[in-house]
Amino acid sequence: MDIHSRQLYLSTVTVTEVEEGVAKAQRQGSVKKTGLLRDWLETVIHLYAARILPFDLQVARQAGRLSDDARGHGHTVGFEDLALAATSACHRMTILTRNLKHYAPLGVAVIDPFASLPDA
Image 1: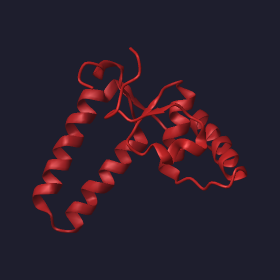
Image 2 (image 1 turned 60 degrees about the horizontal axis):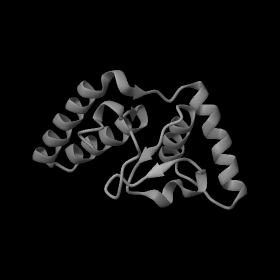
Image 3 (image 1 turned 60 degrees about the vertical axis):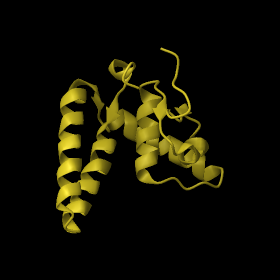
């Protein structure tokens, strides 16, 4: 993934998820974990600052369409996964995640980066 890092993007939703993890660690009194996660997040934000994609109006509308389509096929998808799928669809990108099953009902491009990476 280091080789492809210039081609990788994050979503503001991902930042939200990690920030929630920092807050949870802090609430639970895990000082070391809180510090490590907070430092890691700040580094990621610094490195990816120009490549953090927002959850904007276009993405919100796409999320609504993806959600309805998934529900029409009997699937309920969590907001975070739906938001990430819509972001990737709007930007014609592939989601890199180990949770492939979360995105299957949404019909978006998804790859487990521990198994393979998309062509450059």
